[in-house]
Image 1 (tube, one colour):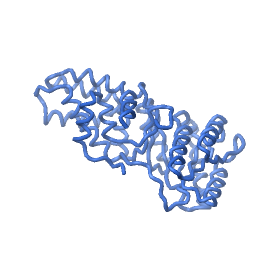
Image 2 (image 1 turned 60 degrees about the vertical axis):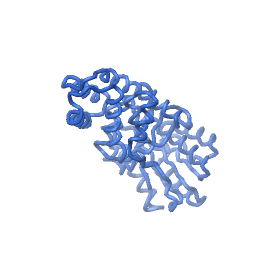
Image 3 (image 1 turned 90 degrees about the horizontal axis):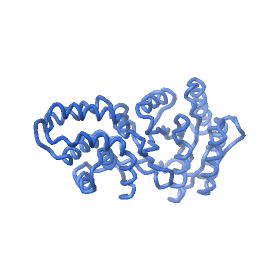
Image 4 (image 1 turned 135 degrees about the vertical axis):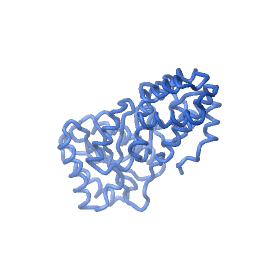
Length: 318
């Protein structure tokens, strides 16, 4: 996990570098707090979280001489307090055969790659996984999912270009049930520029699947690109209008990401954040851990990281 923390820390470097410039202050006076608040907002934590953090600092540390590590530790603690309730690992419901997951999100956020990585992970755990290539108007998405399926020896249900996604989802669910699969992952279109058509397509997928299993889908995971910043908030709002989103996956946490957006999402929506992605490899998609994310966001050395783990509440991961 240490290696993953290094990747995460690197991926959040844009935010931590900006915050680091403020941490050079040794006395928390009004000017320092104002500058820190500006940088927290610029890191996409959002004004509500920024104000909460600053008010806590004002009450507990105002006018005191503090080291940069003390400020980082206090800030990481505040951030982790917000993130801990939403840091919930994705688990397969073993009472479902299969557990049906509808994966949604706008085009370009990494839905198809994320599905492929999840398929690989759970198949390596010994789970029987099947995929549905439901983004039927993007040939590249279908081809990409087919490649992931072959890599992991996982069946992919697909059709011709422009095929009915709802029909494919129905066929996939029927086959997965007959073959006693543990997990069925369904890719979907993400053409948000045509919201009404997308809404109808997603609604039809769900309606048709429920003719076979009235409880499907059992999870609806929204994939978000961390590099889009505040746009991610609008995407959550829109997709919650379209479908019952049950959890989030945040991808592309590379050096261009403003990682504070995850904190803003947690504060505003309270949806579980199941997974985060920091790279292209299968192992770069990992369960979201609040404490690791918080210390990656504020930066600092490895000794500070160790202290933060000791001082934070226990993770929700099981």
